[in-house]
Length: 395
Image: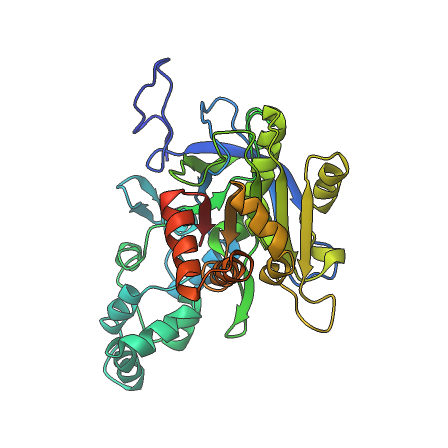
């Protein structure tokens, strides 16, 4: 990933960095946000943008390319029994070694469907091949199988497999793709820096510890003050602060979903915005999981965060989530919305965002006196599409 290979000049003739031509950033700050005893591992990272020319606005995301764990790569090399120094070509044809390609260019922490078919061609007739073909011929079973396994797991199970060459194995793999993280800082507040709030993915399957590709790299393998983290800025088309700084904003960001709202509040303070700020934040335990807690409490004390509603789901016998806090504050929340406030949500699309969405509809029914159909139309059409005051960054 040479910055000069695909760069086109901007007005000053400097490289323009993008997904195809990422900037090699250095990590200059690394702090664990979750406390001792937390079941989560959430980190705050600061990357240096000096010399990149990269700019961003609150609501944008940072694309970061991870690197595979050296331990996993070495374990994989041991099973493949190929020389790590064998010359190969990377995904774009660049010369490299087999080990470097596995480290930097191809996803090895999660298996893909293609490799299973490739494996079948390398196994002689017999029990292992029959078992493999049963998986390959059943898409649902295959999807379930590869969901929890990496290539080490698979090669351990199908140990009769023997690829012809390093290039033959690499041809079955998927090139590493970037992970998008919501930016957690205002560039005006932190010149030449970009901040990330990252929940590190860690889990155990088939007797081995696993971790996310990008989050594991940043947390465990990215050295400080070394320019080796390929990044670019992914501009958001819609997840933006109101143009009028007098507009109130309501932000709902449980867990690492709070990231863009740190950027929002920092930017609004820099702008001298007169609109009010209301944050709904949720996690498991206040003592260990209150991400950026001291910052939020300081903002609240200074009158720069006007309302703060917290939902720590496991600090009491019954679980409390952000949508429960919204319903508890339904009268005021409806009043803010009726007076022009923007409503933002960031985080898990599968569960949290759906629950928050449903809570908004319930509030429109209860406080607005709307029928279920009218409340649904108000949230889905009026707020989201017509007025565009209900904005989501969900994943």
